[in-house]
Length: 223
Image (tube, rainbow, N blue to C red; front, side, top):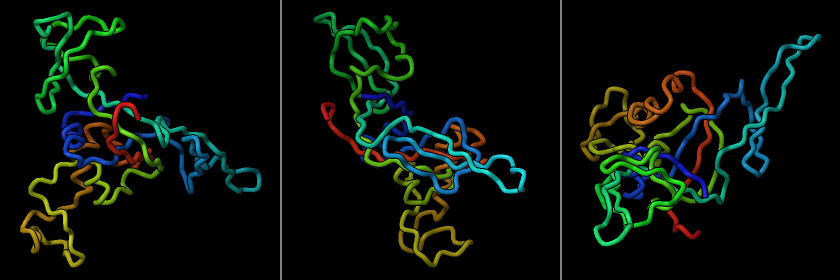
């Protein structure tokens, strides 16, 4: 089981079952991908141009970029949690999940985890035994970040409160409110950029970086 660190907004989206995709920057970035080849084990072969050879032709070298997660992997979400002290009846501890202010079940602090001061948050999100959200990876693909569609932006779990998500085909550039639902008609991919991506990877949108796209679904811990 592998960890996946998510901020509170994305955790809330998962709790509402409105997040079914997540993206991560490919590191290091490939020079160029014309048609990435998938090898089946989470490795993509990026056909990257090198310097021109003696004949003036451009040679291509296959670079391997392996995704952190593969299809079938189960992830536990490392979300922001705060230590609230002992449960009063035993040596078990209680925590609070910051995303929705709900309390954890009482548990014994694993020996590998350093003591957490009362009222402080766990470092880098909750540890595995404290996790309450589990995700199964159902698909992996490579694309450039600005290739995201409005449907993908919604699947990323952006906050669409007050925004139109019906998007009729006859929208004009100057339409500000949807005639169907009366809500603001704006580019949802730009909402994804401003709400989420720019805070995670500053400058990435402008560069149109390559990313791994993971399709995910909620699952039980024992899957």
